[in-house]
Length: 325
Image 1: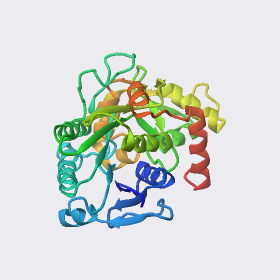
Image 2: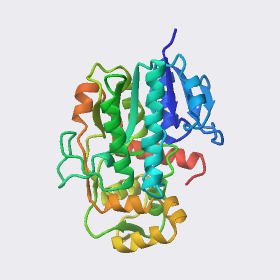
Image 3: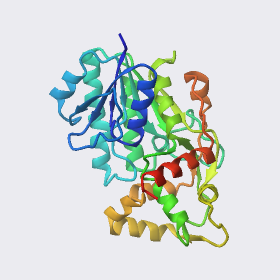
Image 4: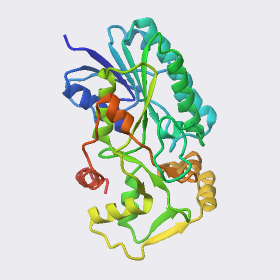
């Protein structure tokens, strides 16, 4: 009999890819999505469950017989409206889900976290998991508190937290804005200094979650998930322009952070659609988001398979095929 894994936030970008990866590895996959969410990205052979995470009784019943949980549902930095919003979903609902998992005897709980939980580095060198945690956003603080809660409960439930870098790939609406900007006449860049960042292709990100289900490691651990390279946003646009066949010369326009912040606060809905919520601006102002994934490679036995340009080509092909670009 196949082991059962429940994936929360399964209808979304990363969640749907995690479901695919779990299914390909022979797991019996239970995809938990909100009642109003589309299951269009979920393929055949999955058990689709429609429920709110806040519905304790339903969640408890659906956890019967589940071996593993990959908790991907949550508020993103690009959509977080305020600290209360982030804490309610990323912390409080996570706590309640963990308690139910303990009660139902779930074997392992993988938490989808973010580099935002640790905060930025102090310079362009790679940040590691042993560096002090200094989140700069509501989103990051809520994820860090959730990680610490999981670690404190790791004697009752085997937990692992994965701090993902910027994830990109097919089905992603956030990085789509970069492609649309690169397709236009000018490319806006936030701030006057380079922003250093890590990235990871979505299929590699999904495989990291599956590696965490079976890795022989100590419970309560935290792992950074990146492709191991350091990028600037300028370099990212260079690669996107290459993939799109666009001219590079003279197309960049630097925008001061104060103006980006003002725009994000002035019209929150439009800002969210462009991936520049006030919380996201706070993160970008920190500049240094380059992180090492050596611990994940060494302990989880995971390694990324996609280089940036390869992943961007697959992404733009998918965007064009589905009429997004």
